[in-house]
Image 1 (cartoon, chains in turn brown, blue):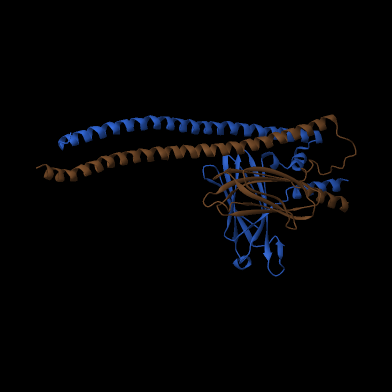
Image 2: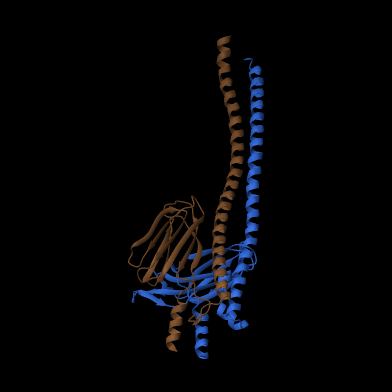
Length: 207
Length: 218
């Protein structure tokens, strides 16, 4: 009885993936850690949503400090690996190369498989046709939700750029109107000032 | 057999959402996470804190007296949840407007001496929409068979997809409005700029001509 309970406890240790969106200020580095058991297949996926040139440095290290993945100034990437050691894996996002733009970064860290729907999954019989149909629909819908998430992030990125462009166009048009007026009036004033000085010398020469 | 199933069910209830991912947070530091979600979506957040013990040089589990302040803001910057929880907590909220919700956490150290020069380790797990459902609980409450529970899960997933699609339509409209506004502004600006240039050119020539005629140079 106790053995079954403990074994179920181990099963429950397979948690769902973590998916977070956070803001990374300029010159900042944010690290996340997770304890992973050997043999687990993990996937790290990240995307920069807003900010600057939409790029970030990412680095993934295993418990001994060996770098498994390192990319500089990447906008989007996906990395799959199988844990070779037990221990704490660490992945960091760095915006240290940027001086004044803060970035919004989304990441999805999937560890192992999803936990089964029922805790007592030690079945003797195979799945019925209905149940296996349900399982395949579930997997298909999971990938639909995944694609929706990616689409939402891309759309957020596009919208952020469009709103930036809109603001820039507004400021630029007002700024250019002012510059035009100032330059044209000062041109006329300057030209007038040239001829006002010379006039006295010219009349003296003339007479 | 019965107590075994009950024990497994209880275990599933308690440990199915054990937060595994963790990060470090300073004493006065506020960590915010953004969740862009459609409306009527439930979000469940679980967190667990550990404090670094300098003497033992390791992280102590669940330090007492060290609470976390959780604040959730909706897309209109209105606070919808603002509560202090203990060193281990679970917060739930449902969105009523679609958009970017901000979940902020910062520590509320009541015993300042515990935290001096140290960092707090925070385990966090945020589940959105269909993932927030606890199927073991639903099966027990509604007395569903295995097949019924699987179909229920599919229904929840399709629900989430449908909500997301609705939200997508609303967002696309906003995007289109911004793009059309930019288009209009660029169009108006080019017309206005041409008119300003021509008008200023004419004014400059006329003004200078009258100026030189006054000065008897022309």
